[in-house]
Length: 323
Ligand SMILES: NC(=O)c1ccc[n+]([C@@H]2O[C@H](COP(=O)([O-])OP(=O)(O)OC[C@H]3O[C@@H](n4cnc5c(N)ncnc54)[C@H](O)[C@@H]3O)[C@@H](O)[C@H]2O)c1
Image 1 (cartoon, rainbow, N blue to C red):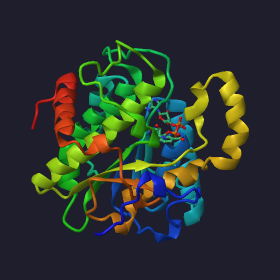
Image 2 (spheres, rainbow, N blue to C red):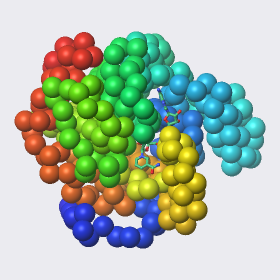
Image 3 (cartoon, rainbow, N blue to C red):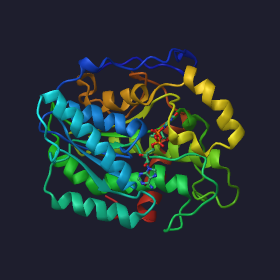
């Protein structure tokens, strides 16, 4: 499929959603995992995929928020169908803490025990501007939550994605990146940023790592002849709880600006939903999407040597055997 490349300078200033909701095909019989689907864009993604008929598993570290999200979506679904089906097992929450590699492995074990197929994995969960902090495994917080946890999760679920995809109906991995990745640098010898920490630098590195991971994953999937695609998406600036870590003056200034200029979570999520479900994206991978268009990502993200190095290093950090 031909998609026109946009440069950064060409990026439109309008904040319209990327695709009309009606343009998406039904997804009955398909299964999706959405990380961080308890609120914000993850919730909107889970909601839309569920309404398209998918069995959606919200994976997150906030069980109460997760239960509320599941209740809301089930209720909406039941009302849409004119019946009440609150016990439906096609919309559920399963605990996953992406800052713990043990939790990632446990989540995968629980999922595999169910014997379900897996057609869509949306790696959406994330955090931003956290003060210097280490995870239980000793990783920098942004690096682990935004990138490494998702790297491990995806790799452990790859065989399920490969088994569930077929030519003409590929399984899809969607990685939630950000325009901040353009400012990112990969510090291969200091991925945990011990030498010189900045929360913005750590966030940017994690989002660039996700783009490098996306391209390397697609290359490996294509080389293996698998019916799985991987894409990175950029939702624009979206008014969500992601900005809760801004210092208080910045918060106060952000609020009125966000109301006018930022996208709503539903608008922001439309790019993940498009990547996860649109017919236009069938068989399309190794791309960075912004406003539903294939867009040029950072120059560094196309460095295939850097992609391979990061892959190898990430396998070592997670204790994964290299394929
Ligand atoms: N809001 C924006 O302007 C913007 C812009 C570009 C990219 N993004 C990205 O979009 C994604 C979604 O963010 P959002 O804006 O909807 O923010 P949000 O704070 O509303 O959602 C973040 C989600 O991640 C989950 N999460 C946090 N820590 C977790 C952990 N340890 N384990 C599992 N889940 C965890 C939260 O529970 C929540 O569901 C993030 O990856 C973010 O970096 C956001």
